[in-house]
Image: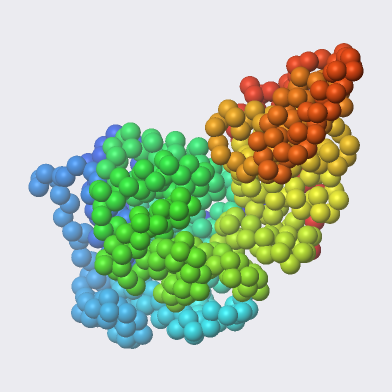
Length: 607
């Protein structure tokens, strides 16, 4: 990942804009401190910002604030906030705003903008600019929706963006934009790929209007790593804690994210369905499937009509092959709202689990017609094309996913798999390395990297990858076997034996059912190794184990006959190698816990 260097924010000192007093030219929002001790004050702020965002058509931010407010205790009548006072400018624009908002609500954006042209109040001006922006986005999506094929990046554009940027830039320079205006300006800059400028504007928006969740969320989408986060000058507000928890989840810093969410629960947000769902997503990201499933099931009981994050829930049911539960979820979401992207993804997962990959791909395409920038659908569609052996379509889908979010390790990993199928190891190495940088503690990425290095005959790097995969907690129990085979190839028999011994110990200690082929491979090698070392007891024990497997039964019997013959001839066990076989400290069970590590410093290979 590319680090983000320090930079000067071209804005006023934060101390002067964190708290904005309710005047005729600013948004009337209560100051937002970092103190959670007064939950009543926080609830007032959430109810107020929910109303302000709703008036401006920012429905997702309004919903988020309302849900969070609902999780806090109700306020008595005496403490309920009166609506913000109407300014002279608001009164002059009231008729136009009321009419335009009605058009806006039924998605007649051009019509809304037409009637708001020339309005001077902050609220009406924002709705005017936002209507123009959404009109351009709608036209762009209409052009994109029927051609989910190989579109070049930027081929279909929102034609309104450049005009909006010019107008908002002038207002920004004149310091005439309130928190909502800054948010919209940042969105326009992000859409034009002016990332640095967009980050600066979103940071400024969080200072001017710290209670607006939309600005924090947009900023989150532009942060690519923890280093970049360190250089941001963010306001000291309780909203920052929600932002940090969210960004830590996105950056796969799951321990930090879970700690943040636990802190938020402890201070009084235990009933928040948003926080519960984010905790479930965090456990999903670290592949703690049982924990994530348990939390999602509890969430469904508390909020049975919730659709957000249900696609993630369906991913977990898919991994566990829980067909009946996934079928029930798909039918339930269809009854609630069949035209939501999450519903389409759940149905797609259901058909995929039934190996009906064409139908699954069709539902992921439906999801993308509803929202062409929905990350999960692009990635899942790539997986389906992989199942159908359509590598070119899979590559296209994964590239779209990366275009939507460069932090999506699944898309990078999927691209690596497609190029591996195409026998292009340099390409798949590049993509696996990107996936590993995003998920340094995921053994699957490391094992894939090791296999690539093996194919490129870079065996030292391959050994590094396999060992690291074991060190971080090998979920597929394959790293030690691959490392052992690599040592075999290099005629490093002692190290190979050590790896096979540890592999056998790990399997029997956790009681997992494994592929017999690999278990038999380990026992066969150890039997031959001990035989060469003249350790008859150990060789005999391993040979007997070989007899339990079809592919090594004959070899095991033959070795047992040889051992018996040598013992009858009076051949004595070797004293050169101590018995029992000792593992080196680095491979002992006590020294190999699952632990966090930074990405491997591997040689850069770019196709």
